[in-house]
Every structure is written in structure tokens, then in C-alpha cells.
Image (cartoon, rainbow, N blue to C red; front, side):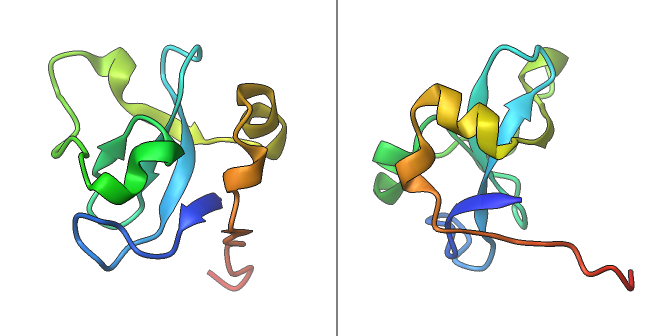
Length: 90
């Protein structure tokens, strides 16, 4: 998971990573701990997230973490702070 912040403005515990939505046309941000959604990295510090993720429209739910190529295509490559690599022993 590529992340934009190591501290979620909402829960202050999770990392905020780049995610791809189920409709496969949108990129956004989501805290991997509290699942708060954010629309773009430029306004992340304002803490205006959406929690919990809306249940009414399934296409709006994050489907997976975004790839570096998808982040670059969106113009957000400069916002990447790091990458969380899953432990291979899990």
C-alpha cells in the first residue's frame, strides 16, 4: 500500500493510503485502520473525511489499494510518503 500519511487526521492511528474504488474510475484515500475516506491528498490535513464509508452505493467503496502507476496517472505521485509492504510471514 502506498501511503500519503502515517497519521490519519480522524483516528490518529492508521496510515492513509491511496485506494481505487469499485467503479474502477476513481482514486481516493482511505485510512487503513478506521476506514475514513478522503477525496484528495491536498486537503487531507483539514481532516474532512467521510466516516463510515457510505453503504448505500457499493461503487463508492474502496475495492483495493492503488498501484504506483495509477497514482502517477492521477497526478498524485509527489504525495507518496512511502509504501507499506505486507509481511510475507502472515
